[in-house]
Image 1 (cartoon, one colour):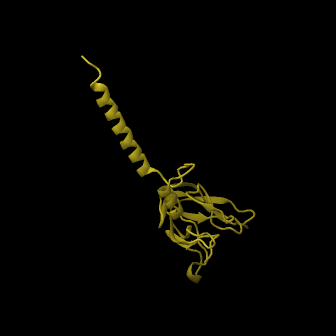
Image 2 (cartoon, helix red, strand yellow):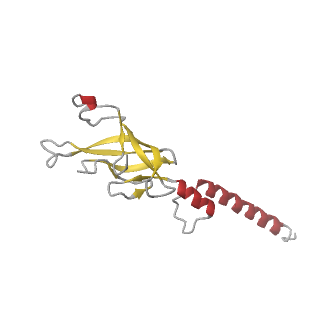
Image 3 (tube, one colour):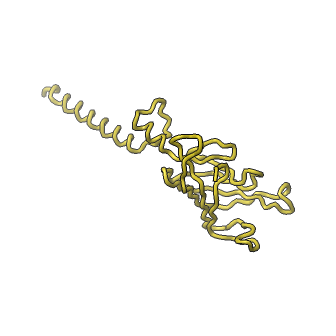
Length: 171
């Protein structure tokens, strides 16, 4: 048996498998996958990536934690896992930790609430051409719910969802 005719067929099959694998990986790669010098198409996608702006004004993509109350950090998200991060919306899960502020905020304790997170309503980031940032957040509480104060001018309430402007963003 002559091995020569099978080598080109095997090499062609291996090359086809590599091309298919590279194509699949390119389709699954994110704009923030860590490539040092992105191709022009990848650079265009990176410019369309929407960010979230933290309390210090830093732009973040898929943060693992995020402070919601910049003045005192008594409300924050942690353990964030993002199922989707797109130009128009981001969806994830995490834990919201809220200070009870009882008897006061300095002596209160942090209480954790599992939450589903949606970031939405992207707008152009002032002073950063081509960059968009999420301006709104909605949290859905599937279990225990944190108290929200002054709900529509009323006393404390415990809504299943909560939506507000994100901190650190221009309104």
